[in-house]
Length: 267
Image (tube, rainbow, N blue to C red; front, side, top):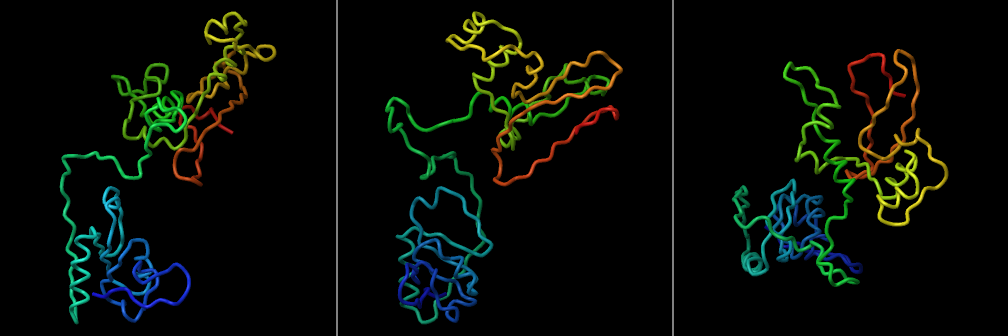
């Protein structure tokens, strides 16, 4: 076991943080780091593990390393440090972690945003910022199709979006959001006059231009329904949707059509 030592002059790096160390001293050793953040440098220089002096806030969030690592509070770390400094050949062993059930979980993490709102003190704290439409989208787009009693797919007009999957709903990937203005525009396109629009919206919302019934389908809803008339004839239709990525950044999504009619094609 070694204290991280040796550092060139200048810069913010320090041996205590383990981000400026002597490779010859730490290679094949457990390294004692006085602060977290530089243990990656120690590993890159051959260290096989680390013992880190961590602040109290470091213990309320999970961290995973591919090397043996031990985080200690300062009151415990100083004992290890004293042993290392007073022993010619200090030795240490990091045992396998044990999992235990925290009966007080869940706990508030130290990095959680705190209230109240800086401008409006009556607002308790920053909280859910998803619109009702986005939440609805997450639920609808992560469901599973439902079969009827004879094992045939009952059809979307019977089961709607499908069987709700609560675990998957919190990871929808893409969401279809809808604003109040979008709903007003849909009603306008449907042919509602200004009086009806005001009754429904509760304000002075109005329509911009003439109604366009064909654009009703473009409401940013997480489902697409196209009335087909007349039957037995080819048709082309365009549907516009805007999606917001709430998954991992730079994710690539591919649209596919799942159906039971080989005559239906998606462009």
